[in-house]
Image 1 (cartoon, rainbow, N blue to C red):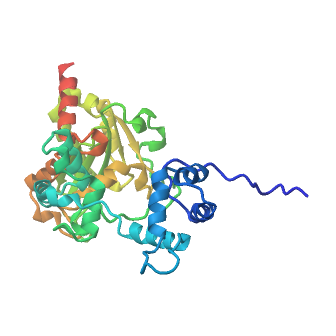
Image 2 (cartoon, rainbow, N blue to C red):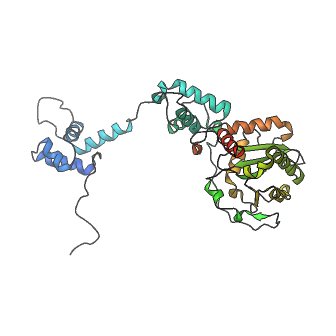
Image 3 (tube, rainbow, N blue to C red):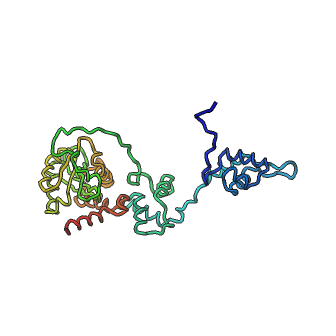
Length: 351
C-alpha cells in the first residue's frame, strides 16, 4: 500500500553544506565497495577534497605494522568534526584595532554615544581604515565578554525594557484636537516640522522647575527648555519665547505639535493661533509620542530621575540637549540631528 505522508527521494545536497551522519555512513559503505575518492564524491554530492579530508579525520592512526590497517569510522569522523567546530573561531581582530577601540571608549564615556553611532560615524567620515575597525556586533560581544574597559550600564540603552500593549483611553479633558486627527504624513517622517512635546520632571514632591522637551520627528532634533514649574503658564511662556525667536516662520518650523493631556498643556491649544497644528495624545499612551519619550530617556543620562532640576541652570539643560543633538544616528545615515536641523532652517528662511 502506498504511503502518502513520506518520500523516499533524498533531497539534493546543498553546495558547501557540511557532511552529516548519513553522508559519513555512505562514505564508509562506498569505500568498502572499492570506489575511489572521485566516485565517492560523485555519489555523496561533494568535492573530492571533502571526502579525502573526511577519510583522514575518521581513520585512526596505525599503532604498529602488524595486523590489519584500521579503516574509516563514521563515528570517529563525526567526533573529530564536532571537536574541531567547538574551537573553530575567527581570530580576534580587536588586537589590531587598539586606536579605534580607544576612540570608541572615549566617545561613549565623554559624549555617551552608542557603539553603533561610533562605528557608523567613523565609517561615514573615514576616520579609520576598514581593516583597523571592528563592527558594532563585535564591540557589543566584547563588552559582554569583558574584553572592553566598558560595562553594559555605560552604554546608552544597552539594557532594554520590554514594552507592554495598551489600549487607548478617551480623554476626560478636552484641550483640543485628538492625536488621531493628526495628518498621516507625520508618521511617514518624510518632511520636517512635525514635533512631539512633553515635560521632564525632577523631584515629584513639591512645585519646582521642570524641563519642557520638544522633538522634531524627521531630523530627531531635541529641544530642552528649563521652565519654572509644571504649569500651563510656564509652558506657554516657553512657547512664546520660541515664537519670538522664529517670528513669522514659526508655523513653518513647527507645522504640527503633539503633546500629552497633562494639566500643564491645558492652554497649549493657543499655539494653533500662530498657524501650527496642535494635537493631544490619549491618557497614559506614551507610545503615541515614541520618539519624544525615547529622547526623554536619553536626556535622563544628564538629569537622572529623582534629582531636583533646581540644581541645573538653563545653560546646563541647553548643553545636555546640544549633546544629544551632536550624536550621529543610524536612521539619519550617521549624520547628526544638529546638522540636519540647521539645513532645514536654512531652507525655511531662504524661502
